[in-house]
Image (cartoon, rainbow, N blue to C red; front, side, top):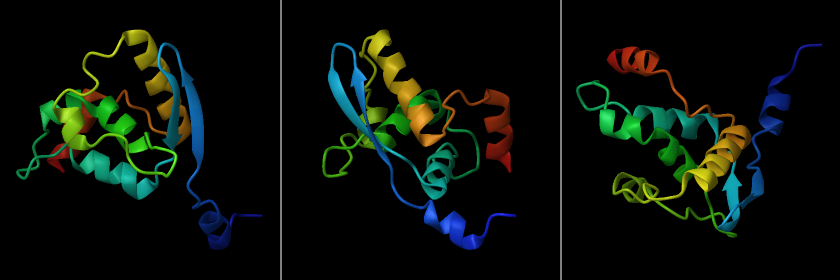
Length: 123
């Protein structure tokens, strides 16, 4: 039997996970909706529909920022924090744990294909 509209709507509940991060402690991440992921992708384009290379280079950090929340579900960092280099000095080991957990929990693959994103930005 095929899935129904009601079944799709039933999975529209925000999910949370606490991820133990070496050297740092526990990090709470939330799932992202399809609309939130689409909004992140949209920020990779300039007003002229060109690829914003600076934002693209920080795509993984932008996705982490969207997923990382406090115990009340409030964002811990903003896009502006990311663009100012909030995550730039974090050790690669904990960063790998964080990005892998966010990718798995949200269903996002932060390793976007440069050519595919560039082509999409033109459309």
